[in-house]
Image (cartoon, rainbow, N blue to C red; front, side, top):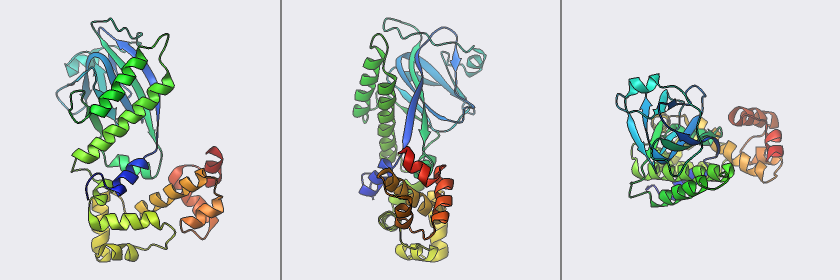
Length: 300
């Protein structure tokens, strides 16, 4: 199964995230910046000049030039700085950002923000990706991404001030292009994408998605793949990084969320994903999503 299959497209479309800005501006002189310790994924789009990325455990700094974008999908020990020397970068002070200046010939202009991935299926998809990804401006496969970058750059130059909402949405779209590129070009990806590339497991995932109300057991899932119960559990868990039960729960809760967003009742969502007890469904939903289904329905 190739990366453009309907199943993989469905998985990508199921990724739910919010983007929020925390910096739009310019650093110059001696500086370093980092979101380490905030326990959040972040993004940094270089709109002007250049800087260096230093990640703990990597000896050499990575140069980032105008048009490049960095996506940190885990809370890593890292810093951005104006120097390629990691030890020197660690000694540089933190500075407040200055306003972007399109005429500046030194320093670096950045659009920085956070990603928040919703619990459940989105987390399973993200966990399979590399901890950090760099989108290069000169990558020939990223023509659409370059168009988005140009829109980000033009918005940054808008006076008197750029729109945070537009920058957040453009950064969100930029990440989705990066995600699609990873799925297309990175055969070593694990998780649900790896399962979706294998016909036997892809068929099972399609069945789980189409029939979440079915009383699935380990035996019935194994039967869909033609494997024994033990072989199925071992291969599935190794590929997905999660047990079949955990993936089934994530798919069911994703479907329940979609129903609640469409104003279905909690009782209807409960029945549609195979639960016979409202109390059991409520506990499972709250554990997977972080809020009770009734509260989720009101929020959406």
